[in-house]
Amino acid sequence: MTYLSRIRINPLRAESRRLLANPRAMRGAVMGGIPDAPQGDRVLWRLDADNPRRPHLFVLTSAKPDWTHIVEKAGWPDADGEHAAVRDYAPLLDQIAVGREFAFRLTASPVQNTAAPMSPTPTQAARLAAAADSDSKRVRGFRLGHSTASAQLNWFLTRTARWGFDVPTARTDAPAPGLADSRTADDARNTEVGTEDAGPARDIRITASRRHSFVKNGKGPRVTIQSATFEGRLQVTDPAAFVTRLLEGIGPSKAYGCGLLTLAPLRSRTTLQ
Amino acid sequence: MTTPPPATPAPQGTTTEAVLLLRLAGPLQSWGSRSAFNRRETNPEPTKSGVIGLLAAAAGMAREDPLDELTPLSLGVRVDQPGTLLRDYHTVSDFRDRPLLQAGVSAKGLQKPTSPAKYTHVTTRYYLQDAVFVAAVAGPRDLLCTLDQAVRAPSFPLALGRRSCPPTQPLALGLREGRLEHVLRKEPWQASRRAREQYAAQCGREQELDRPLYPACIDRSVTIEDPEGDDVLHDAPVSFDPYARSFTSRRVRHGWLSIPTGFPRPDTTDDGADEAAGHDPFALLGW
Image (tube, rainbow over all chains, first blue to last red; front, top):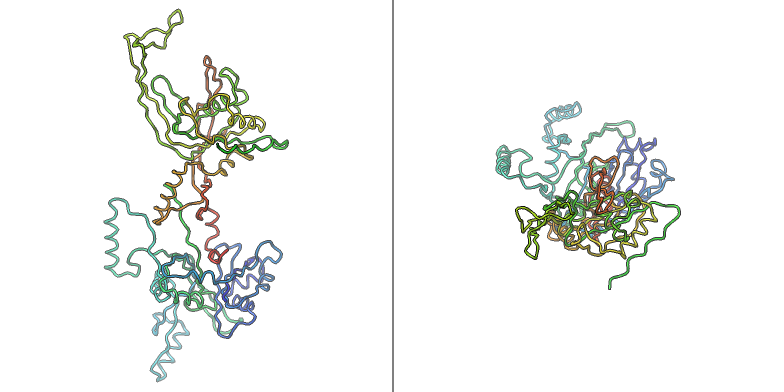
């Protein structure tokens, strides 16, 4: 059984500030809500702060969790409403079928691996120097976060087929009379140059991009992750692969609030001319 | 036999203000405000004189009776179905083949014949076809309660602006509590079944769906009487007396309301509340 939880966070409390500031602290609080987590079981979580006065924490667990500790220390314990909503995930998984369309949101950490970074940090430079000195043949590559929007988008769109879904092209109005020719000319120019964002626009946008940097337990090496929040529309092409990604997450840094793909019903537009 | 009209709520001592809702619909309507001579125009919306006249006719008032009670009522009109304009080519002549008379009168008080003799007047009359309006009349509760009963059992035949434009049923939608604008916002869309189906089909085509789309809300224009309004209409009646007909002006404001469509199972729409909620992963989990 899989459960999706939504926990209200009160941003004015001291504990909340600790949790919101440090993904590692939040991970500790999340893991504290699962009593008998099987070894190696992946817990996915995401912090949605689109309303800064009431951030929401979403957690996907394979066992039924209890969030009393987060509500007591970082929520509104005596307030009205549902402090922590916990719901069975099965109704959603039953709906996954080829061709179904959903609205999605994903906070992921787009990365690339390279053996030769263009501008190495001091740590990377030291490792490269050590590798050059030693007689080992292989140098372990470095994981670098994509920081530009086009690179993050390209990272996402080149992997969607593997993840079992497709991002359809954005629904746009027909061009005004006379503009159709210039648009095709634009497209042709893009493909000629070979830019990453050639072709028609996809129904996806990056709503947030953030660099997190924190240390574990106040000491040790600094952890830095670059996260991006993707929102848009997707169409399921491979249900098995898609369900695996839903349950196991997408991309690296899953412990620190990345990788949870959530689905919502598509909004129907009702514009009347 | 049609179902009996819903019972009007009993007057309450605490609230003295109420709103009476009328559904003005018919094959033809004609709401003239400045018509004269051979060209009889129609406004795109019901006029205050037309609605007050309809209520006065229902209540059995004579044309000479004072309108002191009815003129202070404030009127709000919602356009549920705008309808289309019909131009009626119309000729007038005397069936005895005599020349027509002119408007001026002789010393004896008789109408003079036209000179040179004119046998046919060509007049143009305009109508609204297939339009549906919701008129909301706000005022004292007791008075509106009486008028509501009167519209359901009128003393004189009722008409939508002209005697040739009888209304379709239901005409009276009953009394409501609250402010005029609020009442108009809450009342479901009153358009005909055919117009509603056409609208749903059009929404489906716009979404490139193969089925009609049934939205929960639709935007409709309203005109509400407001002393602070930015438009002036010269259609407030002072007297309907044939020898002393006069009108005065009133200030109105025009706007748009998002009203419920009243479809049995409307599709969810993205109004402001939904937009604020944003991405809700729980919407697909069966609650």
